[in-house]
Length: 468
Image (cartoon, rainbow, N blue to C red; front, top):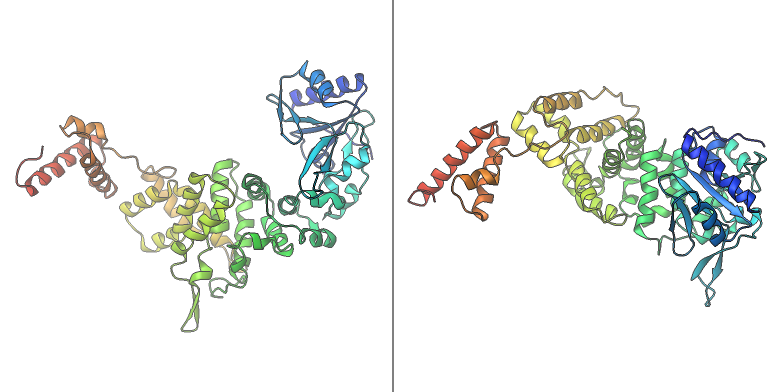
């Protein structure tokens, strides 16, 4: 099959031409491999390039490309050349060599003389094992990737799939991104692999792709169950079979509900990586507390207290993936409050409660996104557009706290000017002033300073003399 690979970025297209011509003139054979070929076949824009070079040693390749482009060399086991400022990776074929004990202690070895078909056999899935020859414009497809893409099937390329167990999570996110069905043989092979030894940061990257790029995250999580890898994420397993009250959740158990919520989230991403990541994880984790709190009471199924019960499993789940404390804290804040928008709307709470909510979750617009997905994840129950979210956003916008917590008006420097000395006492007065601000007692710095004076005067009276 002949294919024209369209690279919309001119600088990237120029780099592709330059590198390929330089390599070919030196006697090497450059081909595009991996995801860029897959995306071109699917008619998707090609925004990054993975170039594999046959027939040239890495040192020679480094010198040739380095003459035109500044390079970074990454990877200890097997180096990859990365162009500065451009999403281009250049490498030579590699094979794994067993260590002296013949077991999993393997290292990658470059082999520029490897046959192209053997190099392709080491790629994870057939759709990623295709290569594209820029000279002939032919798609080189030794393992049937074109056929599998047409049939929407994800299939492992060869028995070498087991060399990297992370490929199970890659399958999870690919299934979600491209709406694929996994070959039964591949599912069976995935069941033989374990998560042991995979660094947390590599796990995190695959979960990120599921949440940030998955068109149907539900498909990825269903594959996780089919492959039995859900056992490595024990917070997910109990969601399956955890009953819900049919009047409120006609869609089924908590697992089914969570899948619907994630698919709803995928349709409403903003394109802001951090915001979508925080909200995506919060949607995934929002009902982690239900298995521990679900009860039958007077013929009804309840899960009272599942918001606070969700904190511990959410932190445990995220703790296996990343040490980013700020991510965990912000996700947990949303898990703890995901019922609040509807409750506040029904009670028509005042400004003080909304200010305190903003203080807890940092961004009320995030919380509304999570709560909206929660309400959307209940088919066939009709979705009413979530008026509670619109009401809360409108109130938060009027208070200027839609995307940030209320900023304290009274600061330490104001109290120092009143004659206080640095120390714990200032902290207590500042906290009391902030609480009064949240209650609406004052709304300007000047009024806040006057309130601080009143607090100091009362403090002095309670101590039997003037405050000092």
